[in-house]
Every structure is written in C-alpha cells, then in structure tokens.
Amino acid sequence: MTVRAQSAERGARSVLGVRGALLLGFLVAASPLAAQRSVPCGPVAARALARGHVLTADDIAPRAGSDGSALCASRSTLLGSVTRRVIAPGEPLRAPSIAPPNVIESGQRVAVVWREPGIELRLKGVAANGAAPGERVTVRIDPSPGAGSGVHRRLEGVALASGLVQLQ
Image (cartoon, rainbow, N blue to C red; front, side, top):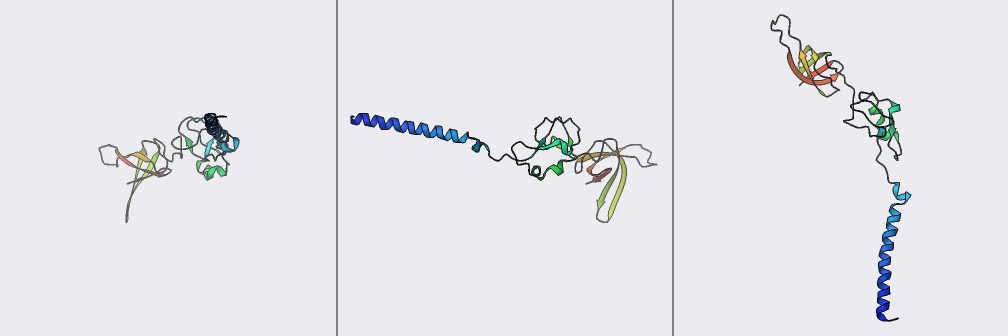
C-alpha cells in the first residue's frame, strides 16, 4: 500500500469515527433513560372543566411524568378555586385560568370600612362588581337619609371577606 493510500484510509476512518460518535450521541439522547428527565410537578385538570366550576379533589391530578408528591404541595390551595374559563383535561391549573372564589358578588349589600389610627368609619353600600379577597371592588354608597339629593356615591376599595370592603 502506498503512502497516499494509507493516508486516504486514515482520513476515511476519522470521518467514520466522527459520524459514529454523532450517531452514538443521538441514540443515547433518545434512549428511555435520557427521556426520564424530571418533569416539572404541578397540578393539571383530571377532566374537562366548565367555566365557573368549583374545584374539588377529583378535578385535580398530578402532571404526567411527575412523581405526584402531594402535587407539589399546591393541591390544597386549589381546592375551592373557581375556573375562569373552560379547561381541557391535562391542562395545568394555574392563574389566570383559576382563581379564588369571590367573597363579594355584584349587587351584594356590603359594609364599607375606612380605618385610620383611632378612627373607624363604616358605611353601607352595594357592590358594583364581584371580587375575590384582595381584589378591587367598586361600591355604590347609599345616600344618607335626609340628604335630599338621592345621589349615590361610588367608592373603590379592596374585598376583605364576605360582605366587607376596606377603603384605602
């Protein structure tokens, strides 16, 4: 074999070596062991959920491939939450698709509280919109008797609890 033939044979072996290494790397990456990477845990819908549905334990499942360890400790925080839109089976359960239930409903009679150190003012009114705890709510304040004008004032506050709004 000539020097030139030996050089060509070595070059062919090195090209095959690179191709073989690439092929081997691809096969290892596509193997079942490589596919068992940790899947982010988190709750998903166990079935199709309609808008306005109140979540129960039967509605919540672990994400496929996660270890399901208490659904990453978020299952209990989801119980009682309300779906804000239609949710498909297997879809992650997270905001804004789900939210805490409203403590104030539109048209509900509410107490409005304004507090300063040493002073507390309470008024009655009607909520103009629904709100979960911590969300903004507009309240139409009843006119005071004898005021004569009959004009309702609108104030904006934060929902604290069922029927209670705090002005800021």
